Length: 288
Image 1: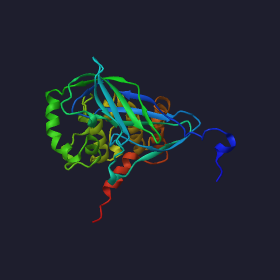
Image 2: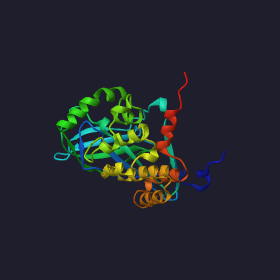
Image 3: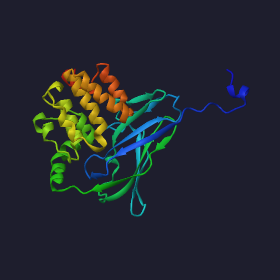
Image 4: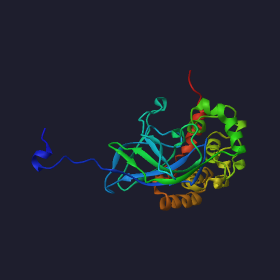
């Protein structure tokens, strides 16, 4: 087989590079609860596509995420964790590809990287993502880690057995609750609740109401880092109601403000529902 280098005298063609082109985050997080940040990745060359990208999400990091965390006051690094490459094998390794000119936004929870007993305070956070050929890093962003208040402490204590069984906040959210009556209705979720995204998503997947009956205003509490995902979830609810005009409104918002979630809107417009898929799966009885 011929070697192109022998004819051109140059180096072999390099695979397209990957960039972590943006990071979205909240300023304040409560220790013990999820620490959600959203990263958006894209190809260095807008005309290039990239295959075989690991797909972390709020449900799990797919071995693709690492962090660096340093005290804002001194610059002392308190956490340095590279992507592990370890995934939950029973659910497989989720991957995706970037078509030319396309970006992908991924909401991830990095709270599992925080050591037990970490002190409240101000920190600088860097997210590391494992691409197919190398690691890419976000710029450092400032965050505050706050101690839980009395009500938050009580909620952490109440949920501790469930989280221990599930293994993480992501799996707690994605697994059906043992008792659906124990989960609060979406209307009771408060804007300042550090678990609001997980509670609402869990209820959308496993709640007693059909999607067409869920009031889209329950998503109004999903502010800050969650706003783009809230738009996509509204589109899901409007699609379940057959309201094409409002689906189009949410689609326009995402394609202009958060194009890294356009894949989600594409699926909704094609008649597919990420939330509906989970509901269909839960209705199918398991064999054996």
